[in-house]
Every structure is written in C-alpha cells, then in structure tokens.
Image (tube, one colour):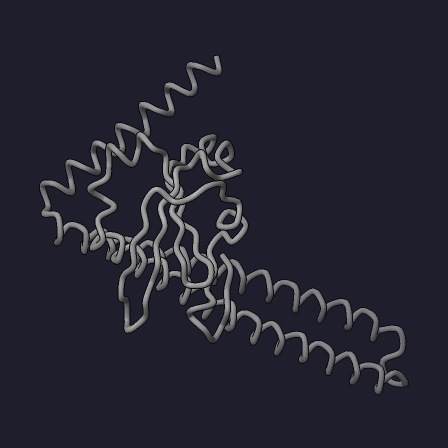
Length: 214
C-alpha cells in the first residue's frame, strides 16, 4: 500500500502495477464520492506486465489507485461472467472499502512511527545518562546499553505485530461492511448465488492450472 498521511487524493495502491499498463481501457466511468470526482478505468489483465504473477496467485481482479484514478485489471472471461459485480453502485461500495482501509493503514503507520520515535528517544537519553555516569558504572554501562537496546527492539517487534493484527481485524470488518452493502443492493439470494459461483469458478480455474502443470 502506498500512503500519504494528510491528503486522501494522494493515496496510492499498487502504483507499480498501476503504471505497468499497455493500451487503452475497455471501459471508463466517473463517480462523485464525498464531494470529489473519482475516475475508474477498466483494463483486461493481459494489458498489464504483471499478468503472470497474478494468475499464478489465482487472482483475476486487481484494483490499483494513483492520483485519484482507479485502474481495475480484470480477466476478460471473469469480467463477462461476473459483470454484475462491477456496476457503478457496487464499484462505489468497493472504492469506499479501499479508502477506509488506506485511512486505517495510514493511521496505524503514524502511530507506529510516533511510538517507535519515543522509544528510540528514550533509549538514546538512557545511553547519554550511562556515559555521564561512567565513573560509577564502569564497564557495566555497556551491558545496560545492550539491555536497553534489546528492550527497544522487543517493544518495536511487539508493536508491529500487534498493529498488524489489529489492521487485519479492521480490514475484515470493512470488507464485511462492503459485502453487506452489496447484499442490500443486489438482494440476499442473488449475492449468495454469485458468491457461490465465484468460489466454484476459482476452484475450477485452480484445478485446471494444476492439471496443466502436472
């Protein structure tokens, strides 16, 4: 994920993939979201240099974002089969999910940098104090410096692990919110049918690729 702490219009998502495009989009649209004009462009997955990487991961839709423009790279057959999922209303729901995920991620990074800076500052101040007390501590100060560095390292790793866990949980909730909005728009029966077909489609393609490689 790309990030900019203060300006939503500068949010980025997979910018390298965004730029690795060949040809023109097969469909374009513009929406108004929170008083801002948002542009979305649809390309076939084969128009992207990273196509092979995504197909190996069984991923047939890739959303990217740069300069307030969304580029969706999608497998042609997949798009034809599940075009109902790419109506303007559902696209807006998904864009909101992306933006809220990016906001959450940016907020998490800002807190991480702040806490790690405070922890590092605390470590540096203690090192200075240890050297000031060199006469009393002697060689023991080196052990204290190492222990405080170890403490800072453990704190940093714990912070990162904890924040990542919180972010994953938050992202799951945001995605569930997107699914709920989609269900409200399409109806419960239609949504469940599409999700089942989607799951079966991915399984079929995955098995097909596996058999071809054997």
